[in-house]
Image (tube, rainbow, N blue to C red; front, side):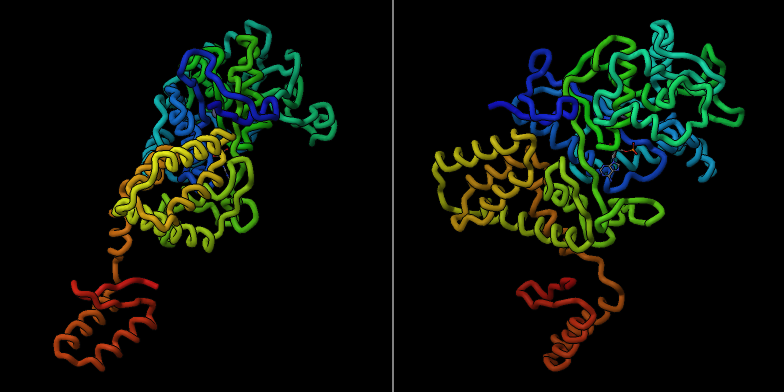
Length: 466
Ligand code: AMP
Ligand code: ZN
């Protein structure tokens, strides 16, 4: 069965096959670790994870690199503003390395909470300064780069074609663009490879052009090449990377090797919040911790991502995310019912489902449709262990940690009750011991008004938040 994947470069779905043997060589643009990653960022990593899992499900091995940008990403993708790391360091009164370590650790903790597999190679930009420097020197030698008072710039006029990834028409854009302030640049679309550091800049390295630091795009080109070679299979990122970051990565690699570094370029659409853009100024760049405070688990957010195809916009609201949390618990309950089921299902039937699932996921990762199939199985009136096994197999792709369903459901019951509620429960327990049923009922009503339902079971009283 072949895997069809959409290629931004050719603007169509293509049949996938690795360039060499059975191993997929893949590069994913990772986080800039200057603050907490938000749920929009995690949509990109959930997509990356699903892609990994689909490839593995099809029997491929993976050599997957993800970078950690801990230097050189300026406030705008197009070389303007301050370095994000340095800016955060000044704001938090810390050293940029401390900032990077702190947010990197939290990023990986969140990735684990989303049950996202860690790529085989994690490459930190500051560990690869030598490779980047080498890359830039060779670009100068090849005639693709020039020096200005600000740094080393890539000369896009030397390329046969620019841009190649995005549809933008550069001449029109240049004509319509705001007047570029940097008169030293040969074209407004020339971009920084290496930036000369102002005196008070902390992260800087010796170079033939004095103390300086790398641009953001060069880091991905240099690290991708180091671990995956001049040509590899897949490059992933968010759609915001298409017009600048990835376009410039391609330009750099062409300047060095004459080749576009990856065969397939895959991009995930943006997550929106309340129908609009996520932005710090709107205060809607939520983290996983913030979702959790609203009663939405990281895995419920992952399931929420599965409600839309990765190439379509997805709109986040707390209302829909809370509904997804409930759906996740129903999914877990349904899975347990199958685990405990006694019916026997024919191999033909399970095979039919397996084939359908494979066909769906191999059609450019159609996860919303795959979830439709999962729900169909969950709802089957005949409860069977074979269905539970099938769901576990599908979970190799979904990564919802279904195997631990019981534990998650038990955890949701263990809610931390406010002192006032604990006190009322205690009073009700006493009332029931004293067979004062009127008082017991009265307290139950008070609890209900405060948002808690009590159920009297053989084991005692169970309390749930409404
Ligand atoms: P950054 O840390 O800013 O370099 O971004 C990390 C990843 O998150 C990149 O792949 C971005 O394309 C992606 N990204 C940023 N915002 C969103 C969003 N709202 N929805 C989906 N992906 C996003
Ligand atoms: Zn990148």
